Length: 400
Image (tube, rainbow, N blue to C red; front, side, top):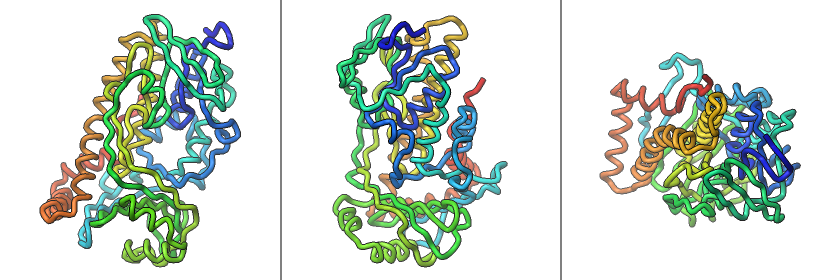
């Protein structure tokens, strides 16, 4: 359908995992797709380690297999989560989830973010209709009833039928379209890193809600774990300044030496903690996916899972329209995507933020309530099953 180097069917702003996954989901079609990315190609093809490790649901694994992304990931890079425990304060009591309570032999997988990014990029190899334009970015967007266009920082103007923004929770493309987003700044910082430990983790993930900070310890391959530390901005500066040995002892102590001595094996990466929910996911000939649509708090590990699901949902609606000879960028198609993705994401977004507020509240009533919730989760199987379903999947495969 392309008529020139400046005309494409779809332009995707952002070559992160969501943008690349959407492009891959559409790659087998006849659509000509341009992916705009400010990073150079050598960074896309071999992304640097950024400290983030992604807990993947079963449905995300299914989608990644359908898109041939999973096949690009080296098996030694894939961690397994078979159990998960939620702890509150100094209490030894925990809310526990076990794969044996499901029909699966694991709760999920965990893979480094940079490995997923590389796999998504590699999965596009051989598709001549997907054009990745690097070292430039979208500076203007114009959409009309029948056509859209983007202006790039190198002054090129690309015409297309549909613009898709996948350029982070602080999406400049979203702002250029005048789409507002509710932003919840938690006033906290997430520090992520990897550590090696002397005891085995037994493929168990921990979420520890301490009174001044939150500590997640997630099982990686071997005797290694991903550390996700959430704390105030002031505290984060002190933690980042710690020498490695002091940091090692501090994390081991806060984790009550469950894994024995722990040793830092990566850089410590800080990220400001801001949750984002766009007021709308679609506009005339325009759609939002990934963090540009919904940027989640990491505590429930739904961020990438929801981004992947949304990208695949949009791609499926586009392919269905093509099958039926419809305009793939029509208002009906984009509204169908928006409706499905909002139904999936809104309850999780609101529920996660409420959970975070409760478990970061140090007042006595909140402490009592959150301990009671852990007991309730263990005591009522339907409640526990509902929580586990949300932890292990977001929705079934979108292939039809």
